[in-house]
Amino acid sequence: MPTIPIIRTVAELRAVLAERRRAGERIGFVPTMGALHAGHGSLVTAARREHQCVVASIFVNPLQFGPNEDLASYPRTPERDLALLAEHGCALLFMPEVAEMYSAGSVTRLHQTGLTDVLCGRSRPGHFDGVLTVVLKLLLQVQPDTAFFGRKDFQQALVIRRMVRDLDVPVSIATCPIHREADGLAMSSRNRYLSAEERAVAPELFAALRGVNDGFLRGERRAATLVELGRVALARGSRWGIDYLEVCDPETLEERGAEARAGDLVAVAAKLGPARLIDNLLLGENVPA
Ligand code: PAF
Image 1 (cartoon, rainbow, N blue to C red):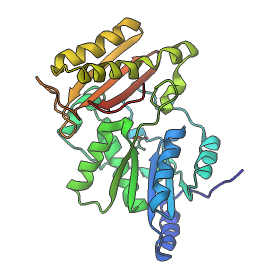
Image 2 (image 1 turned 90 degrees about the horizontal axis):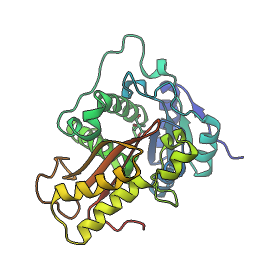
Image 3 (image 1 turned 45 degrees about the vertical axis):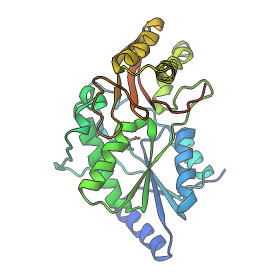
């Protein structure tokens, strides 16, 4: 079975990557929290296209979990992760302990306003402070040419892009398409929380988004009516606890008050059993049936 080196310290990471850079290699970076799936594999594949050295990180970042969230139970599958990364041609894995990332007494945190006040930021206070803090640290540690993120976490990718722009971080941010199971469910590490019964109804989330998109394609432009289409579809199953379902501006994430436009983001977060799932599409987008 192919395998790759695991690096545990920032000092070693810097030394190894300095060598790669001296050899003229471009560095692509795929930050993750582990429990990897084919979606992560596709990020590594995308990174390999233009980078001779692809680095992945696995770090379950305590800062981005709220007090009642799933930090302790977050799935950890290091052996399978390593195999998946190796199969996709990742060159090395950075897998630090918490103490390596946050030394005792670490008190500096990154905070962004605006984009982080809505959608997931509204229901997960402090979440994006944690994401931004760890992503900036990882970017400073790896210093990649490009960092790759999945579009399932649409808001996360947008917030990170803004941070990079605001702080002049010398990196390109690539956002890659959502990877879906054959039945439409967006791949997520948290899908592992679903029981067989819950897994069977989970594709309803994407079906609800498709319903909104179909409404738009039929000519419906009232944002509230489109949202209602999605909510009604999810209420039919009566298993879902909807956190939000919104049509918003894809750049500012402001909720559309009146009229929806092609390219608007339809974003949903909902609980199904123990799992909080998120998904999104862009209105008018060609989505799988
Ligand atoms: O999307 C994730 O897996 C995490 O939020 C990230 C970007 C690795 C930061 O911990």
